Length: 43
Image (cartoon, rainbow, N blue to C red; front, side, top):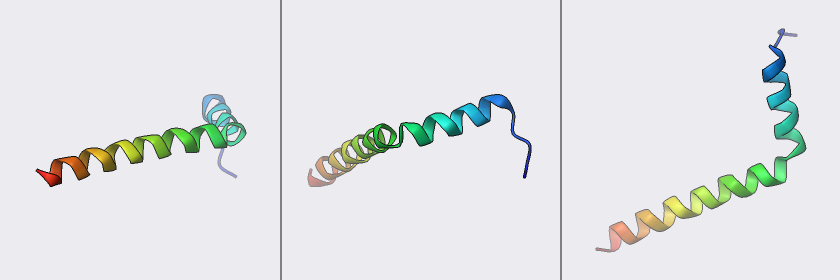
C-alpha cells in the first residue's frame, strides 16, 4: 500500500464519512451548471 500523508488520509476518511453530503453538493453544482447551459442555449 502506498504511504499517504496524514492530511490525505484525513481527507479520505472525511469524504467517506460525509458521502451523502458530498454527493448532495456535487448534485447541486451539476444541476446549477445544467440550468445555466439550458438557459444560455435557449436564447
